[in-house]
Length: 333
Image 1 (cartoon, rainbow, N blue to C red):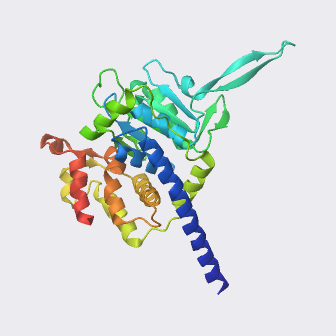
Image 2 (image 1 turned 45 degrees about the vertical axis):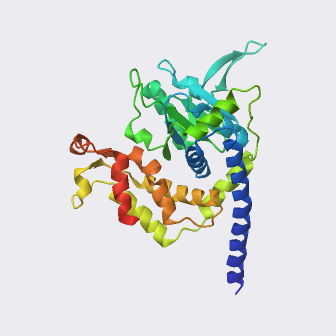
Image 3 (image 1 turned 45 degrees about the horizontal axis):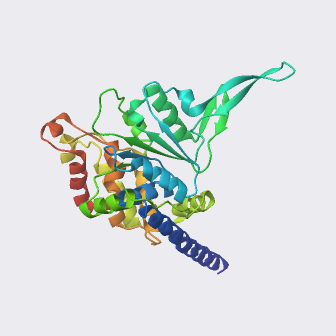
């Protein structure tokens, strides 16, 4: 009987924590929406990514407030935010840091590590595809391992550590596309679209006047870490788990399925893990204690699309990856 009471107390504690954390996250979301207009879906998916403990790749043309979103997130979530503008001449040491030779007054020489901008809680990698593959790899390795090694010495990155990278989908001249293995490091690929007419009207008035709305802090790093722990404790029903497995496995080449003609390669187990965390985080953001199949369907595209490639024949027929994911969703929807 004691063990049953213990389980009940644990469940009550999770419920109380979830209600408190969900309120704080909603307050953060509202605070961001007072500065960034017409991008509710982008704000929600970015918050889901951060709550899941992951990194996001933001794809959009210039001028859609991608940089402002990252700055606002840093202030609202109470995180130490930094920005790196990626350029072809950027070196790994410009991101990670380097050892310099110091000489004391007595003439004794020693090496001292100077930390690079990667030592931030929220890092914006602006136009990540403009840097060379070597520099991209240095950042993406840090994203995966949460630490860096310089001259044989290990340096742990701050906690939490999140990278929000941006990419311009138009200008591809002089860029180095991210390899598939490195794209897989991102929990989500988030499309930043043009705002609708009403949102753009609001942007005109709010951003061209004498005074502009400034972001306000709603959380801090400790609250965010507690929220990320809570996300991993939320229960997930068998039907949701089966929906995740069915969807991710259907997105892989299968000789017995119609998708074999469409899909050249598909998502690995990291996609299933990402989707499992993302649906829990979305439920918490909405103030729910467990995710639903609707969460799986809504988050399938941003979690899967950068982890798939279509066959030549599918591309020749004019098929797109979002197209194929939509078709796969009908099987579990």
